[in-house]
Every structure is written in C-alpha cells, then in structure tokens.
Image 1: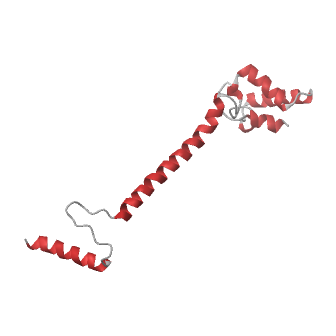
Image 2: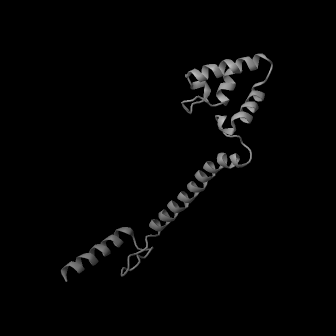
Image 3: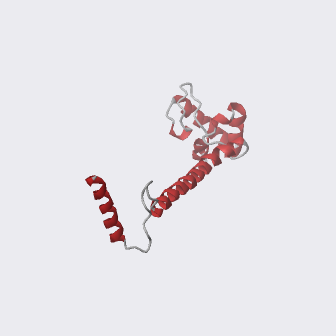
Length: 135
C-alpha cells in the first residue's frame, strides 16, 4: 500500500527534485515515507492520504493529473492531435500519389493516348526531344 502511495505522489523536498516519491532518495522523502506509513497504520486508506496531500499542497503533489475538468483536456488533446495530424498527412500523401499516377503532362506537351503502347509513348517523346536539339 505504501508503494501505491509513493507512486501517486511527488516528492516535496526543499531541493525541489521533481521526482515521484518512490524514486526519490533525499532525506525529506524518507521522512515522508515514515509519515505515510504511520497514516496507513492508523487506518487511513491510500485515497484518503492522497486527498489530504492534495488539500495541503494542491494538485502539483500528484504524479499524474486527474482525469476530470481541464486536466481531461490535457489527457485527450495529444492523442487527438496525433490522430488529426495522421489523417491530414495521409490525405496529403494520397493526393500526391494520385497526382503522380494521373501523369499530368508538362505545359506544351501532348497528353499521351491511353490506347497507345507505353514503349511508343517513350519513343515519340524521345524523338521530340531529339528534334528540339537539332534545331
């Protein structure tokens, strides 16, 4: 139960280490662990102790933000941004691929006849390029 409590709360040492209590090794964290163990032994639950600490220090004591109110937006927004961004990238890539498959001719070129074999298209185009060079 103490491990659950240590995972749920941040260390509030004077050095402001910013570590989750279970990972902190400072003197303050050792004292805090001892205090929490006494509270657990007195019959308080992990949730009650967490609520006491939030009332005392504010939500900054929590190792993870709550999933209500504005904090819910903080949880959902990154995932929504990834999904929307991925969808946008996919649409852009599909548009580029469709554009390349359509084979839009450059200005001044005749569009190739779809019934004409591919090798004759290349031959005709090569001949046009060679004719331009001879001029």
